[in-house]
Length: 276
Image (cartoon, rainbow, N blue to C red; front, side, top):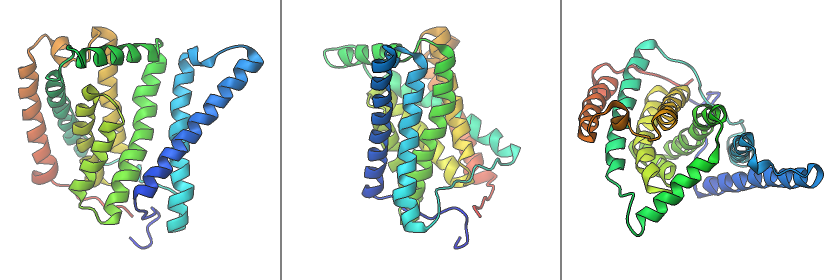
């Protein structure tokens, strides 16, 4: 590992602060650009669907760049770099059913969170209205949710935070959990938080075991694609509604899928990976 081309950086509170400053800087740049455009062209780009995608990408890229220049290069002498190598086909046959199982489990748990009442009702209405206003263009939504978000979020939450914690000496299972909790909290609502934490644990496990950031990116994109299709064609983000089955059945299928393929992936047919 001493001669590895991948820098062995660590993640601390300073790294977290650097990511936040980078995110803020990127957001400010795109905001100033919009103000300039409004002044010169007399047009508010915030009403353009593609501008939302650009804003997200700029913020994420800026956060990653700040962490690279101010943390990784200063402490390791190397630039930020990750392993994106594909793996054997057999591994994909294990991780995708495992991910589907956790998606079903997460849906059942999320369905138990109230969407009505004095607090949850108003919060849920605000959340759904916000999501509806993000974009009306399905192409932009797919590019943002299925391509951009998985790439940038996996680099930050698994590639930087989880890996940095493990490099710091944190036990792998704790690093996976901590990164997943942060991943859930940044979604800023209870309905996405539960799913983000549970699915984040699967993504973290796959990254830790395979050492390739490509695999959690593919799984993340697959999850977001399923959610996008459910929202687009059924107006709900529910497999139970789409398949016309009760939620308990989705839970049962999810538990069986996840338990079986988790066992196969981590115990029965373990494949050993290395990061050179």
